[in-house]
Amino acid sequence: MQAVKDKLHDMSEMRKVKSQAKAEEKAEKSIAKARMDVAHEVRLAKEAEAEMELHVAKAGQMVEREAAKNAPNKPNASGTNRDPAYHCTMATGNRSLDHGPADQAPPTINTAGITPSNTAQAPPVKKLF
Image 1 (cartoon, rainbow, N blue to C red):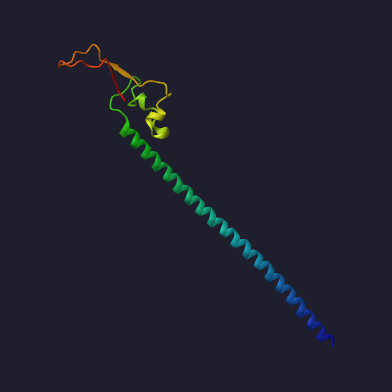
Image 2: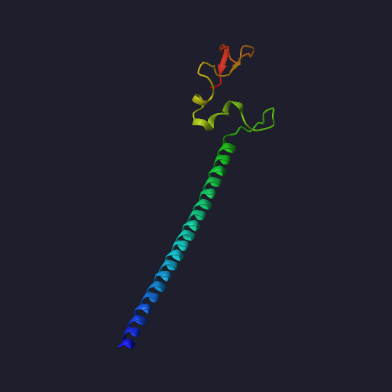
């Protein structure tokens, strides 16, 4: 009778040890899965960051190309090809809004000293814009 009790006791102890081992293995697997998920998300984030940097670089190149297209051909006193009248066109894209204060008059050219080739009299001031 004692042998049967010992055998049953040993069997229950074995079940406990097996269940503990199984629980530890399950916990280790879940930790490993979590690490893999984190690594996967980190990889996706790095790829998205690289793609965004490429997108920003392309946008910068497009801005430079458009600025080069719109820059005047004659260099100014500083040696650059930028016309000071167009210094604010990037803000809103509307020169009339970005050019300066509303009460500021546009630049003018005095044509009073120029003699016209025909008999019609030229106006004294010609507006550029």
